[in-house]
Length: 165
Image: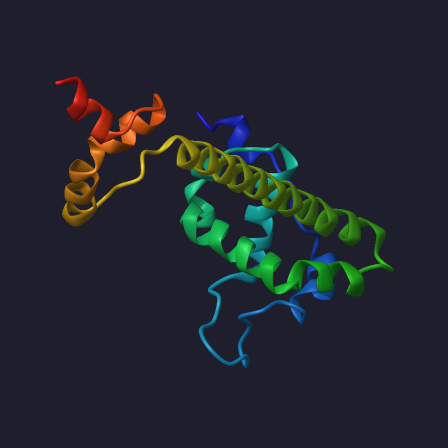
């Protein structure tokens, strides 16, 4: 039995693919490595963002979920998704599809920034309560003058302590 969740998502029509195909990174003729199937990649991403699925649940027909996730992220960081959206302004349907991908990436970026901010706040909080470490020399010098230090806190001197004995 086929899981309907795996069959959900958005498929690209042939006429839409014709508009997208020449704008893809990794096509034949581009420098560097070549994508096996750019159309399948786009459909995998649309499958994910259409139902807010989990990357690990990506159907095997699309390939390895982590490779697709990393490619989506690289395209976002390089500005390629944004460039695609600009180029597709005249095609409302494709513009909306790419817009969904950009919206997902924007949410992920915001979540990463918030996590980093919370982590930095935790580290600052822990740092203020941390006991400073001292080396052996500092420890010895503190021990030598430790009596005078404590006596000075209560307003006595070492001489007055000797006199009382």
